[in-house]
Image 1 (cartoon, one colour):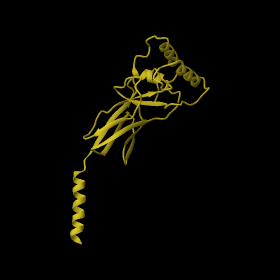
Image 2 (cartoon, one colour):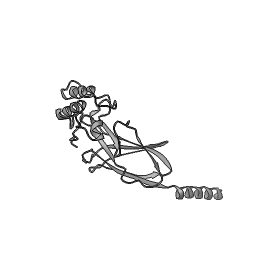
Image 3 (cartoon, one colour):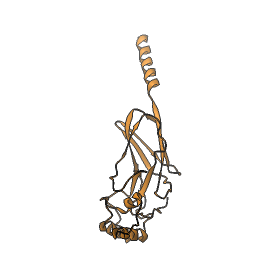
Image 4 (spheres, one colour):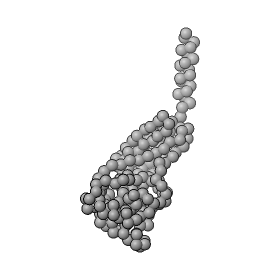
Length: 187
């Protein structure tokens, strides 16, 4: 009996000795460089999920993550729908529709594309106007959108996929507040 217990203990020790873990870290900021605190970051794989919040500096950190697995990384943030949204954003959207070169950054176009149709349209202007006037209080799309630093508008927003073999640092993202074209949301 003691021989079987010894074998089981050795099996447990050897499997623990060979299991590898790593960390994943980065930050989330606006397109203007303001770091975004209190954003939920979710790391998922088959039979695995870990959730953290960004700290006051917009930094997130996952530790002791098993390697050799492909994960998806998703972000969520709640807050006031009109945070950072003003008639100035509405004017910038209108100028874009009139083909004036106002929205130069992918994040600005993503903020202006309220319905996530892939274009900034009269419908987006109408939805933002309804929000500003208080005629509606919800959006059919997420209030916040999170994309990698190299995001190119109008690519669809998809969760980031990571194959973890070693520690990953500086996996940074841009947080885009729907309707906040100017990027002046407060935190």
